[in-house]
Length: 130
Image 1: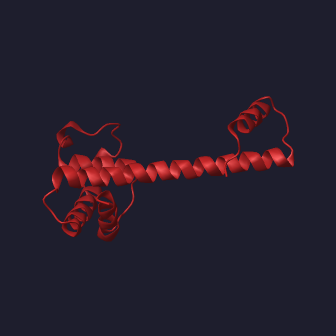
Image 2 (image 1 turned 180 degrees about the horizontal axis):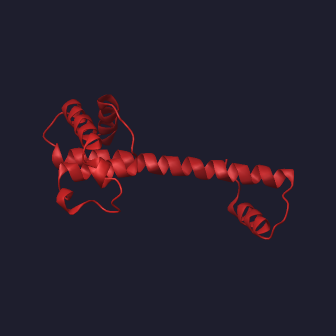
Image 3 (image 1 turned 90 degrees about the vertical axis):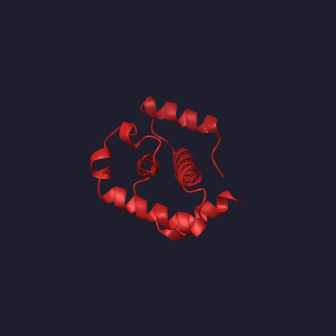
């Protein structure tokens, strides 16, 4: 359970003023940090999954989940190994990639730069139709 927001605000004010926290306040602060970390992870995961689903919907709608997942996996790996090395520092999707499947790959990698298997992609796609 998350600590109440007023408690965290009070603790933040105390820390800003240079006050020492007692044991209960430190526990409340840690619980708040843990809750924020969990919310951030869930939000990040949801964004990543949504980008994969959108890629499939926009560019591979005519494919079965398994085939679309495999194509996304291959495409992401190829893009990561090549142009992503140049494009990763761009704050926005490069103009040459906009409205293309590589633009979708750029957005997916920008959200979370990690390898993902076709099986994991398939599970994400399957959840989108539930």
